[in-house]
Structure formats: C-alpha cells, structure tokens
Image 1 (cartoon, rainbow, N blue to C red):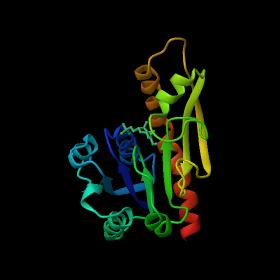
Image 2 (cartoon, rainbow, N blue to C red):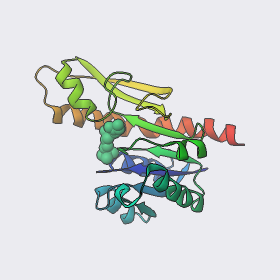
Image 3 (tube, rainbow, N blue to C red):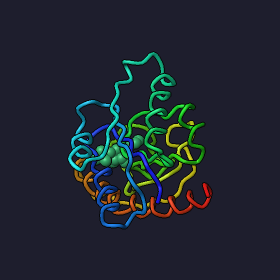
Length: 194
Ligand code: GAR
C-alpha cells in the first residue's frame, strides 16, 4: 500500500476514476490528500463527498512558485504522501516538488506526446487535422510534458468530429487506463522505496 496525493485543477473526473479503482481494490493505494489550485473547482466537492482531505490554494496568494510549493510540501509530509499523481493539474511543477519527489510524480496528458504538449491538447490536435491522437502517462520532469513516457494509448479522430466529442472519448480512455498504469507505477515505486 502506498499513500498518494492527487493534484487537480478542475472537474476531477480522473480523480474520480482513481478513487473508484482504490475503492474496488483495483489500485493498491490510499488517496491521503487531494491538492487543488482552484478554490471552487468540482474536484474539491468530489473529494469532500467521499471524505478525502483537500488542500486548496491560490497561487496568487504567494509571491512565487517555490513559496506555494513549500506549503504544499508541508501538507504532503503531514499526510505521508509517497507518490504524487497529477490528474488535470494545470500548473508546471517546480523544483521544490521535483526535488522532494525524485521519480515520484506522474502525469496524464491528453495527446500522444511529444505531440501537442501544454494546454488545450485536444484542440491543438483537432486544429492540426491529425487522424490519431491519444493519451500519455509519463513521469514529470522540469519541462512541460517532457518527462519519460510510461504508457500511451491512441484515440482516432473521426471525420468532422467536434472537440467535445474527441475530448469525451479521450476521457473515457483516461479513466480506463490511468488506474491500471498507476497500479504498475506504484508497485515499481514501492520496490524502489523499500
Ligand atoms: C484530462 O483530460 C487530463 O489529461 C488533462 O486535463 C483533463 C482533466 O480532466 N490534463 C492536461 O491537459 C495536462 N496538461 P478531469 O479534471 O476531468 O480529470
């Protein structure tokens, strides 16, 4: 068993999928904290509903990234977090967290990296006219969606398909694969920690 923190900024449907996997014993983890950088985001209500502690913050209340990440680190240590799972966290992770969790921060991104990094990855793929996009799970490094790739799954874009329709299918794939990939990552990580 490992303690994880899920970081999210918005709806939190991937948090929900991870939570369900834990609840149904498909994922050997305890979600000890949800971190959210947008007070009022839906993910906060989702976490509170199932009794998971939440730390929410506004970056604008701090003078720098390292200042809010120092605060985050205190919370992560309080909750004995061993692995950080980004699930729609729309901020670049800084060196404070990267140094505290070497090889211990994982992200999901809605494209086949290295194509379409950053924000609005689905919009970027549809605008580029590609026929295939997908989902990437990767370790986080100091770049924007550049860390070592753990797994990828493709999603085809149909003729004339809207951004909303592609996004919906990407989400379905994310919810199906993220818990499964995390299960493997967790076992790998535990063998390194032990
Ligand atoms: C997900 O599609 C995730 O891949 C994406 O944000 C969405 C969050 O949805 N992340 C990024 O774009 C990171 N660059 P959710 O809040 O419903 O889980």
